[in-house]
Length: 354
Image 1: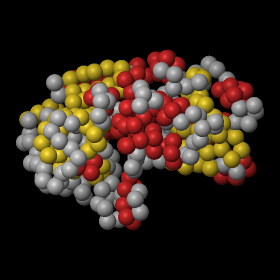
Image 2 (image 1 turned 60 degrees about the horizontal axis):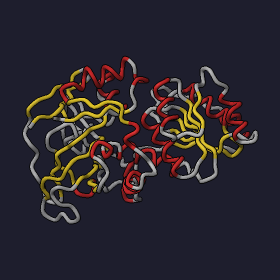
Image 3 (image 1 turned 45 degrees about the vertical axis):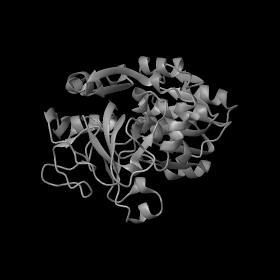
Image 4 (image 1 turned 60 degrees about the vertical axis):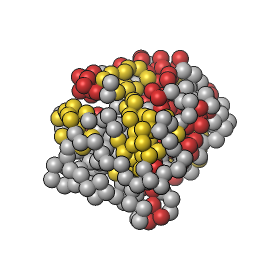
């Protein structure tokens, strides 16, 4: 079968590889669409990270070294089910929760399997991936999506990230939230907040992404922080109190500092983005003096069902965030290189094998 193979920094190839065997308790899927994620971009631009194996060191759960099949945001059609599989049948449209966990560590035993001590991701750490003609996945990670279109189904995974972040931040109906950044996770976080009845203000420097935030209705207000007074707008919207909750969906120290400034007393800042650099936090001035909280959320745990329901019910319109569709053979030039050169020109690029 054909698959997009990740060899390392700036080295991605479409190759013929053996099809994976069907195992008991697993499902064979023909991937339909695969979203290009910021994690994929970092792998291509920076090289293997802590979740990825290297050419010499295998991932502890997949047992694989580089190269591995890429792709963790994907939807597809079930083509075959293994023994001991119930609730799924050939022809079912599905989305995949692409995790590798050990089920033995303290985090897994507590139910927080997204914090597994040996956490890996299908499509990053090994175990196959969505950028292939076939993938075999344990049934526990395969979620039927019903009548959700397959292209939108590829966005269930990042939508689950947003659901987890909003739940973790304890955002409630009637509150006011500021989302820093209108990339895919920022826009989806705003969409979940709006679905839950939270007044939402989105801050974004990209013209295209601001336009998407405005046209999709995921934000009550959309602000260019380089041109507009975001602080004044938040104060006006909250009668001078400040935002109840803010989400960092950028991974920038400057954005974090700005969001702290916008928070109300007893407000909460939730970090969703990955930060490459340490952030200097003044505990007294930024937290204690205002009785505030700061938290962070990673991936998802038991959030896919809620994400699928938001999409199926129409409370979140995933198709609004798809800006390009490409073939797997084009993933370097029209995927990674395009995003590196001008990330603000796209929201979500979908790649398919056909």
